[in-house]
Length: 426
Image (cartoon, rainbow, N blue to C red; front, side, top):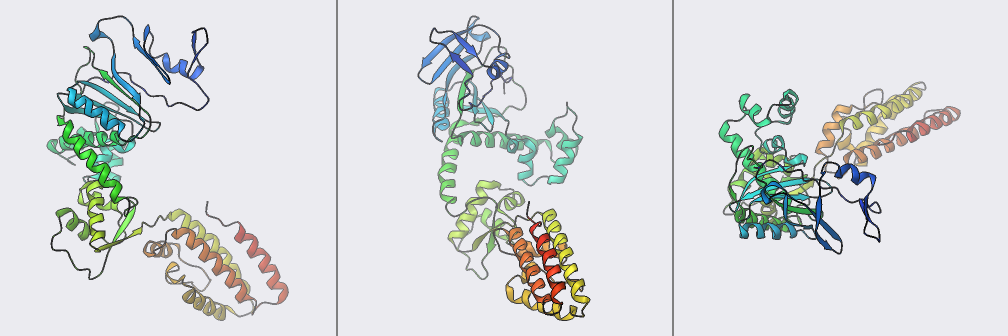
């Protein structure tokens, strides 16, 4: 693709203008915009003056030596970018299109009715993320490669040098990266776009692609329409498909669905399965949708478990439970209290949270609980654990009343209740 022109998008801040035009026609920039505009010194002419937009073009110089904006405007619907690119493809224009939203900028270079290259500021569009989602590299190895890169190193070449992928695979990943950036740009629902003709000084850099625009647009339309349908039953890629036992198999399953079923275990998310199978999020989501239609899988939310939070909660509650057991042990009621608590756990429905239950000191194992939480079907397992631990401590304190003298009971209750109030999910 050509050398990137200095196109930038500065999202507007409500009630903070970048340029103020006085009634006498004198224009002045505010501090924030003055800093941004300092990168573009020179003379400009007013090209378009319309309600809601002013467009300035560089003044002077031959056509091939100055930046020339052919189209620019606001993104008003999710079809805006698709319609503009369709015009570019139909007219067979050559140039760079900037699609900018408050969250990211994506640049697409078109020539001869094809996408020749693309770049993006979005983290998910980085080549490393594309390779990771394809299953060719683990997250740990990806981080190691990135950490070892020098400022002049290229990530793709580093992968080839390490033998993780070969040269042909690198080109395929670069092509896939361009396609994903293109499809990401199509989904923009707000922001602005600018299509700029190349200058004579622009020279090709990086890998040159040649992906027909019309094919990309047709696939983009299909993705937008089908993904809207899929999202009615598959809310996100964090959902976990769960195979239905003894479900009758349909007469024919495509390759993607078959690969997905082989790796479904009820705990892997759609994102995980997309990586493992290498089919990508869209194809995997489509396969999950069809398997849902065939009643071969159901969906459950992925367990969002922060092991550090679980360990902190369990450690705090263990301290409370130890104090209760020590107080009870003073009067010889540990065996009775433990038996009472074990029976309560079994009958309360919280059994799956506590794994093998309590030890002789009233403590539970954080590692076993974390493992148990992964298998628990609950939308917020850590919050449910927090509630279960609170109820367990409350019942343990209640059980101690049959063993402790009244004054000891009141002292213990005040201490336990004070400490329980301080144990929260941050």
